[in-house]
Amino acid sequence: MVRRRFARCKTTLMSVDCEKKAIRITLKPHEYVEVSYTNAWFLSRVEGCEVGEVILKDDRVLIPFKKAEPYRVERTIGWDCNKLSIDGFSPELGFIHVDLKPLITVRITYHEKRRRLQRHRERKKGKRKWEKYSNRERNKCRDIERKLAAQLVTLFPNAIHGFEELDKERMLRRSSKNIRKRIARVSWRNIVREIEQRAVVKEIDPRNTSKTCSRCGFVAKDLRRGQVFRCPKCGLVIDRQKNASVNIYLRMKGFPHNYDWWERSVRPLLNHELWVGVALMGWMPMTWSPMKGDLKAMKSKGLVDQRLSISTKVFQT
Image (cartoon, rainbow, N blue to C red; front, side):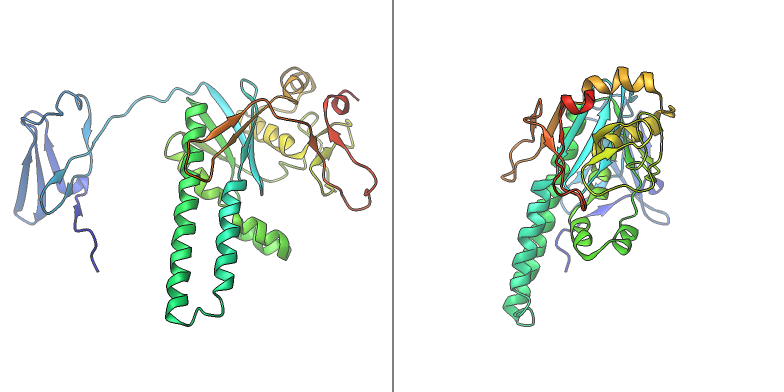
């Protein structure tokens, strides 16, 4: 079933005459169609632009124009992808927290709806509902991903974004059942792809980004569960996600780990964080600054009675 009838012409099958304002499209060997836009109303708007892939419809012709503009990189942001958030760091901006809970909420909601229809999937009515819920989930998730990407590019213009080159299939194979469910709910690749269409993206090797100390560069072999990273060499206590974002930033810039740079550029920004999120009702993305309250660490096995609150006092010790 053909729902929309159109044909997109490749640039290799068309030639543009800029002086005559005409486009010649090859339909088949020795057969052409010429489209002229000499007296078009948009000529003043497309000066200096190139013609893209022309789209042919039943009643009209769509001529896209494109213009190459230089992208000036003014700042570098390193992003760490996690199960509930994406955390970034830049010395000019500080720490950035992108909340992914609205995206995960949509995944969980429609997963429960499909689970209820599992018994009636063989019936015709149940199959239609299954497809309807799947389409709604896909559309809502895409909407949230696009809004997040657009908001990040708007908030941080002229920036190069560094993301981990994560292998999601490998992560699913090596994880337990509960962790696999959490990883499957997050679509990091789709978010990176949306940002890549609007800004410059650089992928970084994700090995040991969370195990490496961002101040001294020591790689911890045994990384305990929880949200706090403790360096056994220099004694640094820092949020695990913030530590990984600083390491990704250093790898993007090609800088080595340095005590003086860390104390001068990272320590003053530890308690300053910008929160970015998207509302589920389709409103504009929201931002919060500064962070409300201190971030508390998760309970780890063997340390049930010990609780750690990441605050100014912890980092001064």
